[in-house]
Length: 173
Image 1 (cartoon, rainbow, N blue to C red):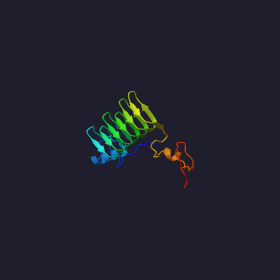
Image 2: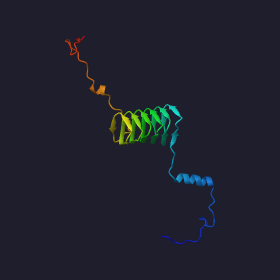
Image 3: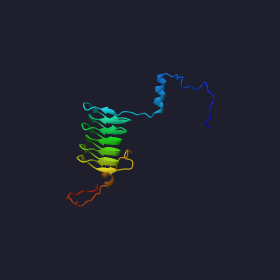
Image 4: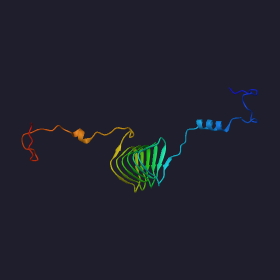
């Protein structure tokens, strides 16, 4: 399987340096490695009115008035979001007023969340404040809106000619 061959003109010897341009080496190296992206950061002095979407990680230390969607979202201690937060992983140290949809949700010490959470995994540390409802789902990122309670319980009006329980009489025309 392994044999010693005589020197080939195609293979450089250790004494001969490989002659490639540095740009080509960088391109070749970048294409062979998975893309390691740094998180996009919304600084504490920044306020965004509107939705924010990212295909990578997102660190929010500022204020966002709108929905936020990314792969991995961290809301820092000075971060404030008013809107829906949707990601694979959501870590909250700051404040959210709105719903959270994520496979993994971590409410860390100092977090304040006022809204509903749909999750596969939920962790709430001590001194984290949460006001809302929690629902476990196998796929919390799936966009399925719950049925409205009024539509499910809605019945057809009944016409009667006699007095009702509230002393109001109705008549059929």
